Image (cartoon, rainbow, N blue to C red; front, side):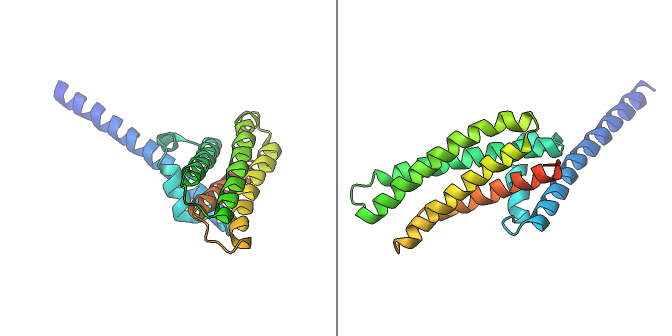
Length: 180
């Protein structure tokens, strides 16, 4: 009898675990579906894979997913800045490309400073401030990309800029869903 009770408790705990796992997944998937439908800048698959890569997403509600997306866009700006710095270390850089990379580095550093303020604003539900600052970071990545195009050069930072724009768009979509 004791074995049966233990088995039943274990089975119930397993069912509870499964239900919380599927709840987290459905909030994430529903959020990404709505976000992708609300913005041409957001790929559903990119949204799901980006948010799901963070372990906090398993049990996150909508506000939690927004915070994760905000952390991801900040991380992407930091990675883009590091990549630009690495590229600038190449001694054989053409002058025009070097100038574009220096401009991008300044833009990324500005975006990183701006995004640092977003976390407190987000926690304080000041979503309009978050939207302004995230939009500015997205504009900076677009400006970086435009600098290469205007110089007739291929940008080595296109993927970072694209990801930063998508992640920023996810933040903007979520703050809109939260009532911004």
